[in-house]
Image (cartoon, helix red, strand yellow):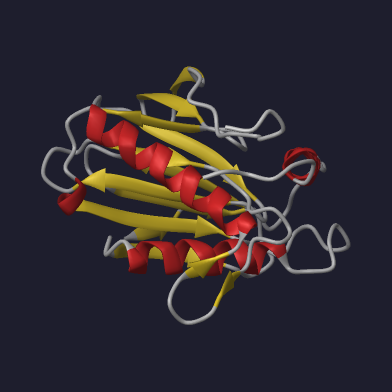
Length: 207
C-alpha cells in the first residue's frame, strides 16, 4: 500500500447500548468498516458516501462499510473497467468481505443492502460524487454476483442506517431536517483526504 493511501480502517468503532432498539450498537464513521458474528446493530449516517450492508444469509455473520470514491472514481466501459478511483471502492468492498469470511461467512451466501449517494455536497466537486458512489456499488455487486436485496440510493437526503446482521433487517431514516453541518463537514474532510493520493489495489423507513 502506498504511503499516501487512505485505507478504510477496521478499528474498534464507538460502541454503546441503543435504548430504542435495546441492543449493543457500533457506530461506523466515514472510512471505517466493521463485521461481526454477534447479535448487535451497526449504525452510520450517510450523505454522499455509500454503505454496503453485507451478510451471510445462513449464519447472520455480516458487516457494514462507509466509503466515498475519489473524484476520478467513475466506472468506465461496459465490462466493468474501473478507474484508479474506482479501485478504491473495490478495496473498500473486499476489506469488508474478507472480514466477514474470516468470521466464518461464505462468499456464495452473501447478500447486500446498499444505501447513500445523496446529493448533499453541492459545490464540493464538479462531478456528482453521490451518483458516482451509487453507480459504483451497484456495478461492483453485479460483477461479483452478490445479490442486492434492498437499496435506497441517490436523492438529496442524508440517511441514518441501522443494520442488524443477525436478522438482515435494515432501518432507514431520511434526515429531511438536519440541525447542523456535521454530516457534510465530516464527509468533506474525509473526501479531501482521499484526493491527496492514489489508492491501490429489504430496508424500511423509520421515524
